[in-house]
Image (cartoon, rainbow, N blue to C red; front, side):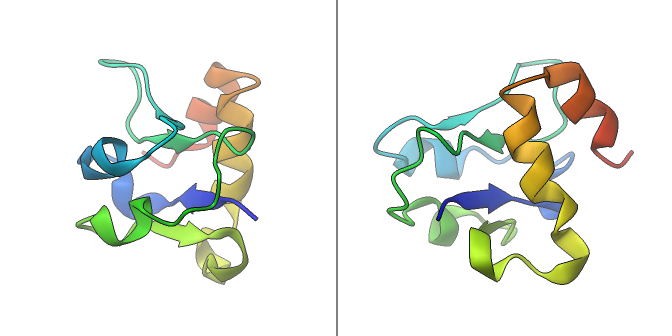
Length: 91
């Protein structure tokens, strides 16, 4: 299981989660991205990021609300094809 960043992060991009991540698995490209992304291959499922998020945008994979399910794919896709992932992030 990994963690997923969802829509409340869009245009917020508070980096509190980045500061507490012990393995630095949360990334974004400054000035390009509208949200942060968790690398599922680097995430160690420690959960430190979830309570650090001030907008409650981070969920354990199995706890992502139904209306946020697309963000599981978006987070994974960003590490494979950044442009394709960015195109899926709602405006």
